[in-house]
Image (cartoon, rainbow, N blue to C red; front, side, top):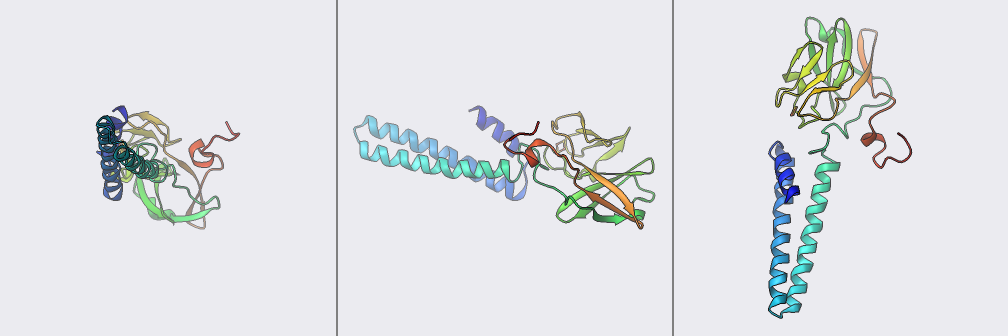
Length: 207
Ligand code: FES
């Protein structure tokens, strides 16, 4: 029951394919519970063969729903950190012309498949993931004040300098990328050291 409640909470903030997968995940879980209850009833009535078949069906349904739940968490980052699996190349990569930030506080650009938020911080370019770690809102639709980005969906605040969370509901910091300007172009790359989940999902050795 606790997992049902937290899953439902995560699901209400999903969209598109994640929402559909979440719905199938939930229905599979309820179907598995129904199969086990039916199995229990059948066994009480002495129909053990039917009971075994129903519990086998329940186990199969749990396998399907478990796989889908794992996909939502470990591939889509639902309920975890929506940027957990979005990484930039470790080599310097072109992001935008230097003039992209002229007269603007921030602008979103696509680097490969990763949406990157470029922020003009007193003349210095800072690059962060544009996808909120809470539920994936586009931060370029949010507001920028006091050195912080405020998420447009639920109001989390992230410090631009280092991506740290200053106000929830987000609990995970934003990724901050390295930046430099070469020949009038803003370039970005993944920082050498990233958070544990991304580079070391089983915590094998690094602190
Ligand atoms: S999506 Fe919820 S705070 Fe950003």
